[in-house]
Amino acid sequence: MRVLVTGGTGALGREVVTQLRAKGHRACILSRKPGAGADWIQGDLVTGANLELAVKDVDAIVHAASDAAHPRRYHATDVVGTRRLLAMSREAGVRHAVYVSIVGMEGVAYPYYKGKLAAEAVMREGIVPWSILRATQFHTLMEVFLDASLSSNIWHGGIPRHDQPPRRPFR
Image 1: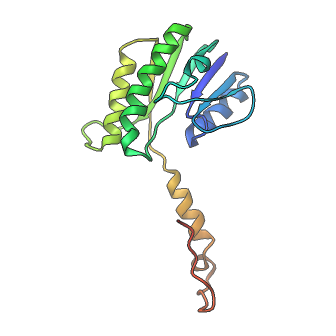
Image 2 (image 1 turned 60 degrees about the vertical axis):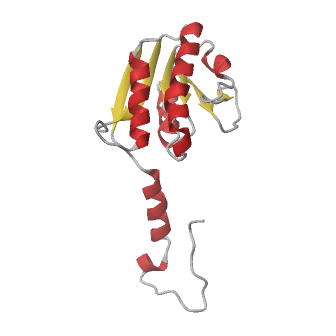
């Protein structure tokens, strides 16, 4: 089966691609970032760049793309981008689309969650056959903090010397 994974370079998308390939499926990545290989398509849900190419000859889509880092793009990526992706998927004959959302976000006023809920509503319109998977949240930012703290002198029982410059893992 040929499966398009939107957000295929993100923490979740990378794992989805790995698992699909391990099961013998042809996983194609759609990402704004450039990449190499026949199964990589640089495109953009917001602008629609290369979406027609991305959905061509695809059996299913795992829609894991989102833009939590840029508040001004929540609606454009999660709602407008989802609608655009599904419309092109219908034209291309995609048989099923899976949208990855978040558990327990109803009633929370956070704009990112509102965008995810609005994207779920777009999925429910049935432009193509659909499933919504709500995962618990995972935060790659915690990995950054842990990596930084584990490499610091604090965890190694040392005290920084005055002749050492302070460590600045974040910029």
